[in-house]
Image 1 (cartoon, helix red, strand yellow):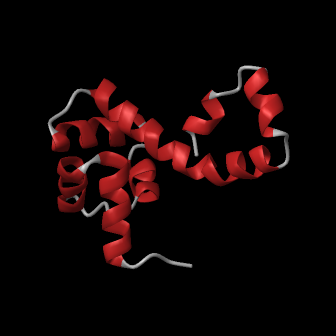
Image 2 (cartoon, rainbow, N blue to C red; image 1 turned 90 degrees about the vertical axis):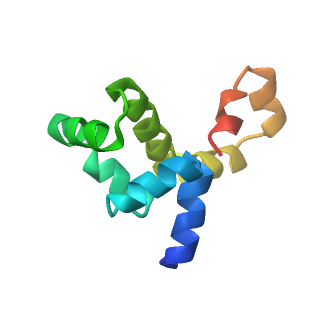
Length: 99
């Protein structure tokens, strides 16, 4: 189901913070997937970094955060199919940060 524009803005603010979400909205980037697509190629990342007035390293961190949203569902399904206690005992606590 497609999110409404208001829901997309709430998602953007939750993922990137209010300031970054508003800056992306000015670039007509209204959801994390559009942001990932805009930064897929080096030229796109350069243009985004310049438009957002931020170092490329920080931009890459934001892009990685957006990429994690794409795999969130897969991680949730994987965790449900395993024993949570077993995962914790084996040091897989990082998985819970991705949900």
